[in-house]
Image (cartoon, rainbow, N blue to C red; front, top):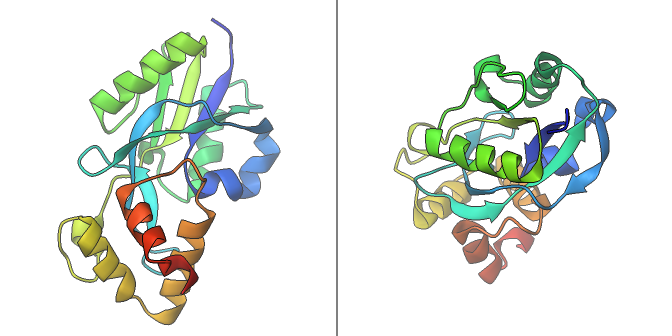
Length: 192
């Protein structure tokens, strides 16, 4: 097992790493674990646009990407990602196969998939953004997530939020093929 710490990505982290760009090596590798991902988080920083998160209930199995961190200490890599995401330390997932650093994750079955992938790839430590879906609580219609309800939410956004949503969905990596994105693409929603 090597000492690499890798960071998983599937959304804006890939195309908008911001300050994290100083702490990563190389380019994103499109060979991460397949995880249940969907545009099911209402983002306050993106004016209520929907963003991509791990969502075991509504997500589609999407092959994620990963990148190598320059950091040698797990806590430093976790802090880098926490800062970039503007979240709490408890919302950064960690699996360490080498030093048995404190494991931290929201969804045990997802963590198991990440651990299996890391073992197969001979990767010591995996760090990822572990924000939950908040669609039911934060959407404009306060309904459970579905493609129809997500479209209803998107169409109810104020103009600046709608612009943010279209930009985010359009910029999401091409491998992120969720049912919501497929439906939006089939109607050219992003380009309207």
